[in-house]
Image (cartoon, rainbow, N blue to C red):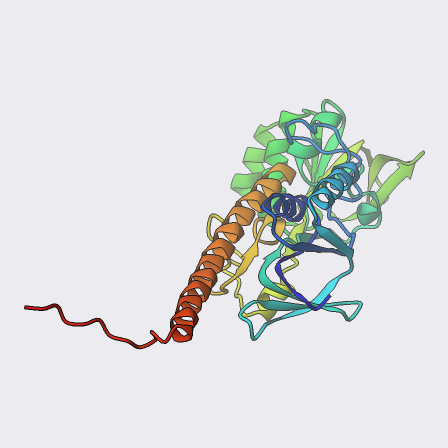
Length: 332
């Protein structure tokens, strides 16, 4: 597996598999390295993806793997543990299995992690009835008793408290120690949201369903779904190991086609560089990156083949004894 290939893609989610399919159809040699730990694994369904509304994320990825493999893409179940610039000008990726992969181009589509509030039950119910994206899951819980639990991302927590009433007017905002300023408090309450201050001790779950949010004083507030505002942590270790730096927004900057600033022949797509990218957006970013990668490879192929053609002409000229000959001056 140490042969030089056209593209290695780290991450087999929507962005990575879409890029793999596009490049596979372009007759490029592609390897996808996927650790099998998608961020949306706990979710039973996804929405906002035209033609796939309600499909489970696992099913979408299974379809994507089959489609990419049909075009010659190789999918390796492994984790990338390191990356360095190769002498050839590409990138060598080290895998957990120990086998290196050297590629002319690299696409990082490793996603991000969700740092959730440290409240018992929240992590266990995440993606089921503890949710973070109302556009992904709000419709399924509309008009039910809902709540927002403040987390490490204070701005997102306040935004959620203002936004969720679009789906249900039976809404409670648990500040859980977050200091909500007067102006924000007034705006939230104007939306008909009840604000409950004080620490949250845990969740009450019965018959595998959320029934209530339990406060530190023992009070239980009946709720059927809870929204949280996680702190997003990009899985960008490989990019940073190669020399990329995060921008002011906390993410490695890329151009509109996904090319990483300051890293030739390296692209990134999806949540690793865009925390707001839903599945359809991540897939689109993967497609755009694939187009840019294809153009990059084409340019290098043309340069190489042109150089080989010129070298072939020179060798042919030497073989006929004409190498280095100079044309005769025209007669006066």
